[in-house]
Length: 504
Image (cartoon, rainbow, N blue to C red; front, side, top):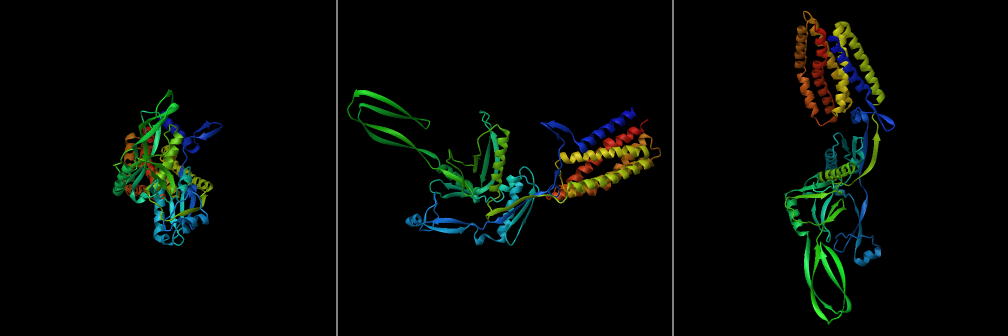
């Protein structure tokens, strides 16, 4: 019975080791794919996308009237047309000299960082050239990187304007926060709709309430006299139902005299607003009812039941929300460089390191077996299982593994070796290490002595986990899971194998 228990544990350790180091492969279409999750690697191991944003140095032609007011035209006007209308054309820099300051460079850097964080980019590096204003951004390479890059240099200028007069009614200063909401109408099967939720500040809420009362669809009723002469003529009767006009043609074949009739007609007039981001029109609409809560919810795309379409809508809306919520860039930038650069640490370097650690561990296992005989052999086998389980835990807890994280793995292995050696030494010092009670006492004393000394390290590791710097947090998270496994795994597996071996 004792042998069966030990053999069962050894088989379990072998299975965990096989899964951790070799994976589990299943056939997907015409290829075999490993179903075990890959490591989440930090930029210093996996490479990164380097994006350079340079200050825009171009100019834009602006047409102004005799009073110096900017004039919007749908078509480009010739010099003769400009002269006829009394207009002048000026070349205005996209970035005036007074905005090209160190303060605005730093503010732009801060805003780009806020946008990356709001879109879920936990790891990034940003630097700014104080002389030229160029900003260099370094972010991880993944399936969402292109979306992040495309929104980096978006100015984020928000405007709500009168659709007719083009007067600006609201802008970025009125916004408090912007986020994404989505929901579905249970009474229909149209699917889920994604909304851009714009919440305005106190002053903006007042403006929105007034605008929503003004820019509504209204109905005007007018009366007009109509002279009708019917002599083998056709009369048209207009009826309006649900904003739809239906024509009915009726023919009167009798002779009639000229009569005066008065008809009431309804005409719908609408005052509309236009929403713009970076001078690009997003939508033109009016309000059905006054908005008193200071929140404007805009549906982005139509309702859908398709998962991929819904995810695309959420991703695009989230990008827009992050741009508006972070505020507009004080300087207009161009993306002048966008390239992926591999890490200096290659797979070959990691393989060499793994081989070196494996050889040192092998020597350490030999020492354990020579000093502690069967107990040393069982502990060495359990040690291999701990390393295998440890690597799986790191993958499935989404720990970002950096160079410092690899150091944390090595430190954990060293700590476990020290603990195992102390555990076996305590058991060996017992009067009779073959007695179960003495083995239990040795395990108890080892845990007490080892983890009391480990308290300062545990406190430091927990602090590292909450530091918003990936290289440090990676080390902290790797060490955290390592210490947890040293405590739990050795109690459940290593100590159990040693106690089973000591049973009569």
